[in-house]
Length: 254
Image (cartoon, rainbow, N blue to C red; front, side, top):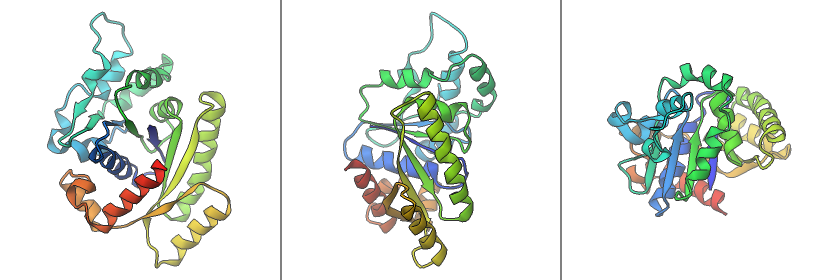
């Protein structure tokens, strides 16, 4: 099972959703990998804490290696690192991803991530966190896997961005990956007592968009788990926000 979590709008909870779904997978005994393609490295910090800056080699080195041939290139396994949590691994991000992007594009390396994922047959589930832009890394991820999850944070700007995002996914599907599809839209930071979020979600459903049933509410517990670099299932497994993520994971597993 391989999924990319993508939205061109920032601040919608991509990293939180990526890491918490991956952590739940790992907690159930599945060997799980997070690939952090966002130069901001939020998923990397969430899962590695203080070790995020020093864990090497990272994805910057992984992509840099693609730009030159060497008999001594590191194998993919060298870029995969354990987290403090059993069964949960990460390919960490690097700020250098930004500066490498134009070089990778000019050398047409956009299919390399797909080729790499085909090697990783020993992982049960793989989750890819992406930057908030349709750039080389996001396109590489959408070409590499068939399932795309879209976080939606219940405001009108997000709704407008959603239509553009869907068009971009359809274009990549037509040009590069005929199996690509939006597996679901995740309603995040949902306020059930507020009129606008409920109205927006109802309208998306009425339009026939693949809105998932599980709603993820806002909670200070999420920020606390960020601060301690501890995914919710390991931070407070009984909390209602944790249980919402469990419900989301189970909905996706059906």
